[in-house]
Length: 66
Image (cartoon, rainbow, N blue to C red; front, top):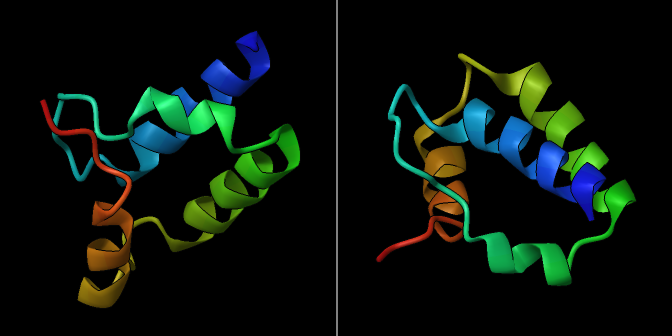
């Protein structure tokens, strides 16, 4: 589980848009395997700084709201 948590933190940094609050619901770890998280991270790394508004809207579905 530690590897998943680390990947989730790295993905969170990539989609945080400079905000400091958590952006991903940790409950997603239950549904995503390591391979999926690695693929998401790689995809985001290639898009950082070039995310379109559509991409940002799509990523919003993974935000954690309290």
